[in-house]
Length: 355
Image (tube, rainbow, N blue to C red; front, top):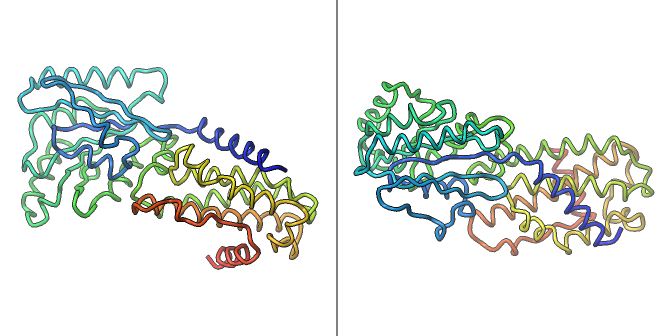
């Protein structure tokens, strides 16, 4: 198999994943200045709503700005200000929500609502309550008290916030206090949001969110295990059938990259010629014995399972380091691409068996 052929197979597997992805739609609402943009960027990253893309509606009007990438669609509601006509504003917002929910295509529906109230203003308005109870599909809403660091030394004020919301029929499991200063509450919000998002749309949200790396690692293990099972069906005559494993390994690597929320072009860059070349070379009959030691140990189903596990964990370790590089703000190119060396393969198999 040539490098060009390998890249073509990988790109086809990647496109299948992208085409089959169910993207959740999240609507974010609340008064102007409550910290909606900061929340979006903290949880979902700046790729969805970068600083330069932040729009501002005309004064006195309600505007719905839609942003999307390969994983998520975000509807940002702007123009909500105290001086506006409450009745007209709620009427307009409700009409927009109903329009989306009545769509025959469930992919157009609102799957999650983040309604933001700032702890910094020290009050919940009647408009907040009307919005939460009357405008949105209640089963999909999460009420977020932003800037909750203001309440760190004001427990009575925090209790007052909770009391008002609960007394108005909003259960406390739909309320999350989130701090802009130290990220408190963000993991809790991710978890609660996943409970609200319909099951078919959760995988894309897990991939996109930037808070819970443990959840991504847990899913990665499931991806590897699933592909180990698929590999068993292929079987293996030592060396001769090694190339038959290539499409399966590429599909697994595409799935793992998708799990970390990388965009299509980012994935193609991460699995560029350097990585592809080492994989293609390792999967030829003449070099497999040197780069994949398991071929010399066992044959049949156990061999292909072990090969798949080893490559899966090597690829996952590499992608996880790339993901952390982006989150921590340093150049992803500084992450050393993984290679299928005998030493590296033996180590990852040993670690896998010990885990």
